[in-house]
Length: 258
Image 1 (cartoon, rainbow, N blue to C red):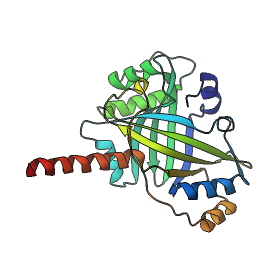
Image 2: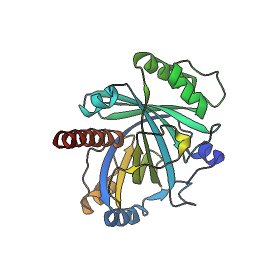
Image 3: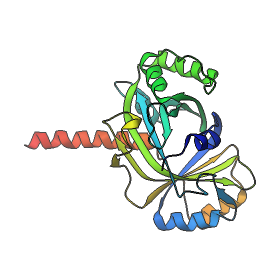
Image 4: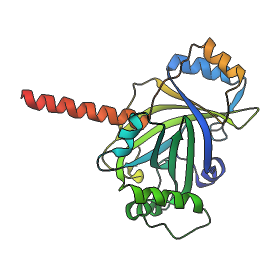
C-alpha cells in the first residue's frame, strides 16, 4: 500500500525521536489475540483506520566491509546506522526520508529529513548537501553530512515490510507497530525498483515493537504478562546480514565438496 503525499506529510512528518524500543516476535495467533486486547487502550494510526497496512521500504547504507552492521551486532554501548525510507514504492520525484538512527545505552535517537528521492541518492553518493528546500531539516542534514565524512557509505541492502501501527488513546508518547511479510534483497538497490525481495522471517510471523519515551504503562505490562510475550533482540538489518553470511558459508562448503 502506497501512502499519498498528503498522508505522508500528515502522518510521517515527525523528524526527531528519542525513545526506548522493545521488540517481540509473535505468531499469527498471538498477534491477533494481543492486538484485539490492545484496542481497549490504543487505536490504529490515521492511515490504518482506513487501510489494513502500509508498506515501508528501506535502503540501508554501509561501508564496503559492512562496518556499521558488524559493529551493531557486537552490541556496543553506542551504535548508528543510516537508511533511506519511503512509504510504498516511490517515483523519482517522491518525498522520502533520510534517517540517522543511533542507540546509546538502550535509548534510541532517530533524526531524519525529508528529501526528494534523487536528492537523497546524490547526497549519500557525493556527501554534498542538497540546495535547501522548505521541506528539509537543516540540522539533520548537517548531522548526516558529518556521518558521510566519517564513513564511505554505499547502498548494501533493501528491506521492506507491511506495517500496522497503533497509538495510545491517552498519550502519543506510546506507539506499537506490527510488521509482517519482511523481505530483503541485495540487488536492484534503488527504492523505485519495487518492493520485491526474499522472505526474512517465516510466513505468519510478526515483529512487534513497543516504542515509548518513558516507561510503559502498567496496563501494558499486565497484558504482556497475560499473553506471555517476552522481549527479544531482533534487528531486521542485523538478521539479514547474518543470514547473508550464513548463505555465503554454505555456498563455500558446497564448492569444496563439488
